[in-house]
Length: 306
Ligand code: AMP
Image 1 (tube, protein in one colour):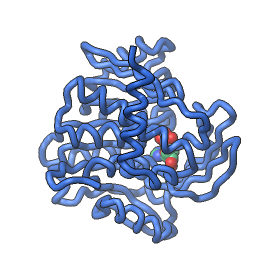
Image 2 (cartoon, protein in one colour):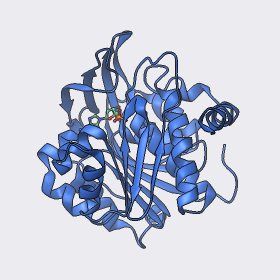
Image 3 (cartoon, rainbow, N blue to C red):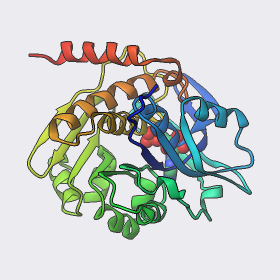
Image 4 (cartoon, protein in one colour):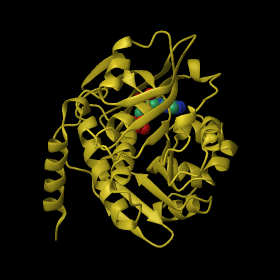
């Protein structure tokens, strides 16, 4: 899966059991969570370690699944209580997730501990979770990672705005979907929204627009990428985290974080996400190989060339 000269990636985020309803079916308590999708996607490129918590109800087979992909679990603690649970649904507009319930469960009292040997990780992803936990993990790093990216959502923008502002000032890249960027900035135009988000301190912002693709803005450049066109989308849950895993996985492999590699990473992220949405949970992502990813990458090149 990955080569010897591996650079390690560290992620803190949710490891969850999700209950999801889409126009195409319903599933209860399936494997989900921002750190889950991120790490499975990143595992195509490099060694990845998770910092998170699960409850005693977390199925054993999922630990095996993570291990089988080389995902490090030293920072994944099993705590008394239930695993984080998200319940949501999508109508025919699959770009919008409707949350029915968010049960933080074991995350409520979680005090993340980054294992000593992971405090030098070069790439850090603060996946969608309580911004105070994201801050705590960043503080524990021995040296500033080469790249720190962060994702969040309406739940935290509404409930933990001050904490979110504090952490956003300390990171390099923030990823938000279009509704979150608008909510965070109070701007409806996405260029203005991106500029407003940048004024909080990050060097770049990526706005995810579901089936319409991705916008990337840094202080002096921007990039627009369409989504990989698919005939059938089954369940969009996890697309954003998978995108981030593809992007950071690629950057860690390229060992460069310049404009050109970020653009390529955005395409890899979009392609990884295109697999996630083709089935519930990470089912499809777990069936593919690098050959499938490269196949879509070449196809993407052809259909966007002019
Ligand atoms: P996305 O990539 O945005 O579709 O993220 C989907 C994942 O986010 C689901 O598998 C959920 O378990 C997880 N999730 C939902 N709400 C939250 C939350 N408030 N904090 C952390 N993770 C969440």
